[in-house]
Image 1: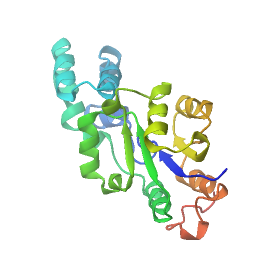
Image 2 (image 1 turned 120 degrees about the horizontal axis):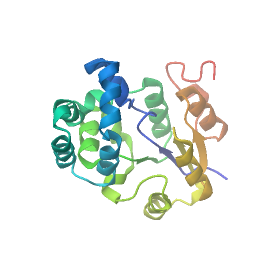
Image 3 (image 1 turned 90 degrees about the vertical axis):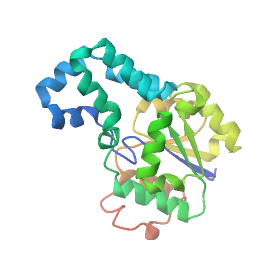
Image 4 (image 1 turned 60 degrees about the vertical axis):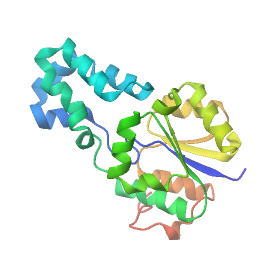
Length: 213
């Protein structure tokens, strides 16, 4: 069955997202381990991805952990540093798919405000024909609802979608709906999969994305 649209996750696919590495750099590994042991930063971020206001969530968490207030506020004040850099080879694959004429969608667990920050920083976000953002939809991967929203809104049949994500549980949820899927472990493997599906011609890929694939 031919592919009618290509769906990209964003974090750890098109841009990096490693909060621990950010905090290791800023406050050192020992303090980072203590911070993450005492403060549920990931729980706060999950709430933001579900639609909580970022500023309010950070302020509330800082109020509960005043000894860590400065570090908690980094999650908002320095968020873009945490969500960087972009992965050039993966972005090249996105651009190649777009240039080939197929629709490209984003399907991402992302906050409302942080998505706007990232979009302003990374021009390739504007290549997406549609962006399905968890905070705006009030639905998150891997719950079935967010996949259903994409299917209904785009009008593309599940079997004609191909989706890449770095998390196996998100891939499994899409596969259960009949989507074609690819667990993202690097741009070369993803590009090779798209070539095998007839989405891309290897010749159009720049910068050796398929080298050694």
